[in-house]
Image 1: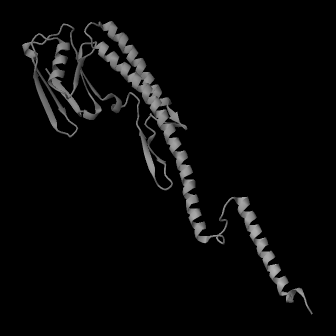
Image 2: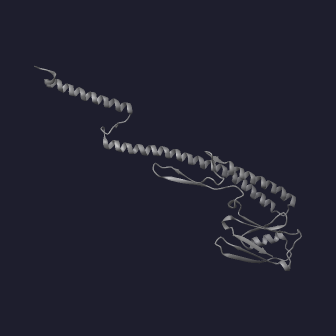
Length: 257
C-alpha cells in the first residue's frame, strides 16, 4: 500500500517545505529585530563580538553624558571665577588708589567702604555658586572624579574655598602700633630689624638702616625696596603694617625700630 510515509518524493517535499518555513521564520525574526545575529545559533562567535561591542557602546554613551556634566560644572565655575576676577581687579585698583599720597584720611575711609562691599560680594559669589545642589566654592566641593571613558578612564576637577576670610585668600597680615602723623625717623630709631620663621622652619632676620627724617610712608617704601619677604604699607591710622602671601607666609614676624 502506497502512503505518504513510503512516498519518497512527498517526504522530500515535506522536508523542503519545513526548511523553507524555518528560514522564513528566521528571516522574519531578523527583519523585526533589525539584527543579523539574534541568538548563538545564528553565529556564536559573532554574537560574542556583538555583545562586547554593545557593552562598550553603552559605556561610551554614559561616558559622553558624564563628560557633558563635567563640562557644565566647569562652565559654571568659570562664570563664577570670571566674576570674582573682576572683583579682585577692582580691589587691586582701590588699593593702588588708596596708596596715593594725594588722598586724605576721609578719602581712604570711603575707599575702604567700597572694599568691604566688594569683599561681601566676593563671599556671596563663593557661597551661592552651585551645580546640582553642590556648592562649588565654599570649600565643600573638594575634588570630584568624572568617568569619561567606556572603561575606567576618568578626570578630576578640584575647586577650592574662595571666601575672603580664609588664609589662602588673604595671606598673613601684621599690624604695628599707631604713631603720630608727624612721626619721623631719628638717630635713636634709625635701625629697623625684623625677624621671622620661614615655611621651612628656619629663623631669618634682617636689619635695615633707615634715613633720618623720613616719615612712615617713606619708611614703608624703603623697606619694600630692600627685601621681598613682606610688603610694607601704612594704614590710615598711621600704623606700619606688613603683608605676606600664603605661599610665602612666615610663621610669624617680629620687628623693632
